[in-house]
Length: 282
Image 1 (tube, rainbow, N blue to C red):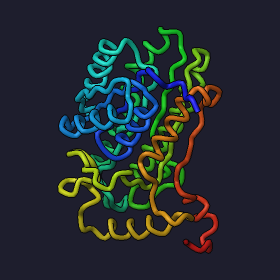
Image 2 (cartoon, helix red, strand yellow; image 1 turned 90 degrees about the vertical axis):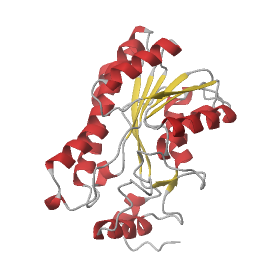
Image 3 (cartoon, rainbow, N blue to C red; image 1 turned 45 degrees about the vertical axis):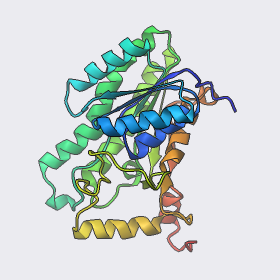
């Protein structure tokens, strides 16, 4: 199937590890011109090499720490200067400050979760959108949200709230820019794991064994791990990152030109398991 993405410019934020890396790989396999953004230059170089091997028409890494309020404007200006325009924007930057009960959380942690999940998306979208409109429309914006924003994950109150905000933003923006033939959609993953078991997480990844929030010995982490392992209705507990990439590719493809304001959930049936808790696992 020809997705129509060959030669299209695709900007993926937070693309040096995990979901972002899988998304970049998936667009590369479609022959897109992939711009990989992240904080870890060494990891970015690895993704660029992978993208070119997979068939990307072009692969470019641009360093940016999008927690810096000014970084989005700088990044997007450089992308536009070097590529001429962005056809597909994938807002993937996200994360969480901690995993704990809400009663034990702090305002600093809430602000971090809102900043990294919501404000990064708003800033990058605001910086890219005028150029999409000026080019005559036809652009695609894809926000990577989470099932946490749909059902709420225990020990992840502020993260769940932040991801829920992305659904509201996705719907409003889709309504506002539809007249320009720009579509805005979201993808909601559950747990993910690298498609390549040998993949090394970047420095800023939550999955980094030295610095990642998922690698501490708190009771909440242990309980969260137990919950993840039993929620899906499929034999596998998590999605592969390239499967999240496949959902993003569909939303950016010519086959999805009439899809906007929607969310593709890639959760292995997690919500089914919640509604049917007695369903036997494989």
